[in-house]
Image (cartoon, rainbow, N blue to C red; front, side, top):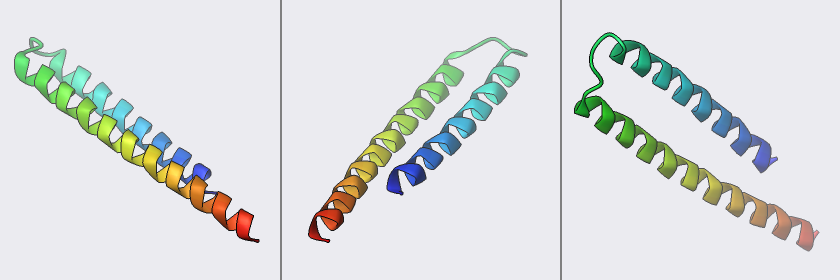
Length: 73
């Protein structure tokens, strides 16, 4: 059950990321791609990487708890 929850959250994050990238590309295509935009993209991806790592840890914890509860039953 936990893996379905985490997969759903990952999908939402992916959809949000795709939307933000699309908007960023749309807005920057009107002007030159400058250093500020590149830094924003870098920071965005760094934040996404942190979220993904946290979700992977959450999934691992949930799987361990599920395994432990099945083992005790």
